[in-house]
Length: 234
Image (cartoon, rainbow, N blue to C red; front, side, top):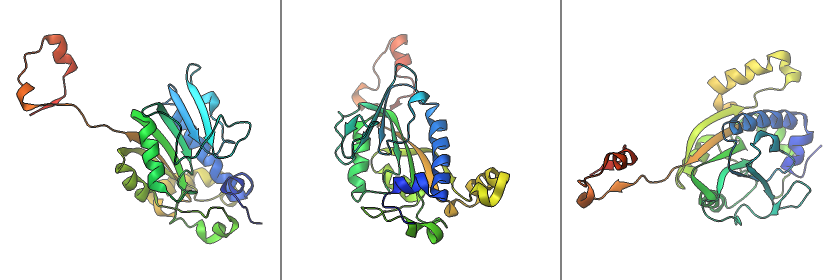
């Protein structure tokens, strides 16, 4: 059986369903430390994380296609959000299904607040999964896959830096039984290039303030000095 959409493959194919469960666990675990603020999920509206966030937070799901879970219908390459308005972006398989990767990365960086995070997952272009399962996905548009290291390097061009990551998808429970968790742990530690999917947490960094030479010797009161502690002075 073939699947026209990646979402369908992850929801219905045995191995795809296994991967989606691992990705859910990864995303939920990383979100547990980012419970507050405005959270925007781009795509995969059937993956819901509403109950992870604090009550005062705002959780929005955006997608190109409307359904009951989508709040805003928009493209990831033209986000309808003001600059520095989103605290956390959830972007499952965001780079797997688009052609203008740099445009989408720039848009994500634009809407994120300084210090904001992107939680991203994607299919690993080098993973062994391609030998057995890639033909079962006939996605439109065609999938464009990267390695995790390539994504990290390209994201840095937009001020988005790796905070942590994980490799997943080394075997299904049907093959390894109760040992599949051990296989996942060993794989993430020793065989990252064989993983089916990767999960990344990236943070938006901004250029730190630096006093100009003529102001470096300003006399500041003790309270002001605390505010400037840690600044690099020329």
